[in-house]
Length: 120
Length: 318
Image (cartoon, rainbow over all chains, first blue to last red; front, side, top):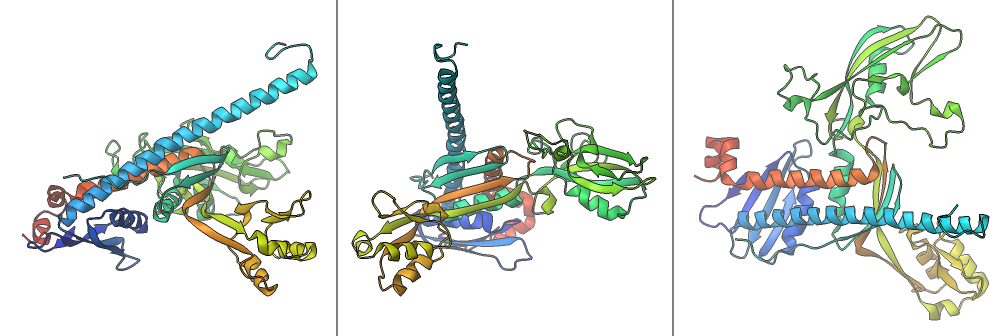
């Protein structure tokens, strides 16, 4: 829900239902990164009511466009975090396997001194 | 009209990973993003938990609703949860939300016939779907048989019986804490500790030891070879300013400089066992993306018209 003026598209307040600090604070942060934004903030009118008001004022572009771009950026960030997290999990598992292989070969050498690695 | 993207590109490094415990670093992002991840992990990642209990026979010492409450809190393996539908959104069942697509059925039958007390545990819950079962909390070593009993629901005496049928549904932590997949999720700012070596030289060994002792957690120690104060565990620092106050009390302000790096976070995640800790983070990011999608779509005025009808046009000033 957008509360704005028909004449001045640069400033409006967006009222989102069923949202809380989780989304609003992150969107506020990405809005602040955008140089087109002169003012942005969010408020929760009442804690029992699941509603968030996000205020956006820009230098010239319509506020809804700027908000949409920020949401797009935030989605891109989430996707990026997801892919690097997946990579980090795989790397961690690989490094643990490598460590176990090295330890295993040392144990093998100490218990069976004449054999090479992977022989038994 | 998409201008230049102002995305930041965070970095992740995993420190420790077990099935139910995960410690990782998240850098080059803002506290609001880290907090959003934490909030979603605690309250909005869906899991499966028992939600409806039909009790046929209960002659135990606990009353019906007590047992139903305890059954709800038992963690169930919820790998299916992300793909499952909420009962209220399911169109395959005839409205009571008990079909195979949106729910899992359990039953439990226990009767004590011996003189010994019978422990009814989560292992006695029999599921209709083998992928959704009570979480097995036993150690993999399992050297003692008594360690592998499961969560105790109720204890029965000779002659007491418990027979019930339970339906488990998908839900989120926001509705009830039984659906929360995370036991604890914490993140801390990574500390940057700089010791002023010149001022440190001016202290005697005794004074150095005193100063190190004043910290409640072991952050500093004396290097046995060089007799210098070194940082042994920067992350044990809990941002209490004890060492700084002690330095001032000893007459040496500025002895150490500790500040929190504003864009570097260390997450510690403990899962209840319903979802693996690494899977929990991935699901949390998915849920966050879904929320953003929902808001993005509703910004489109056509969507608003669908949602609000004539009211949408009125709100837009039309």
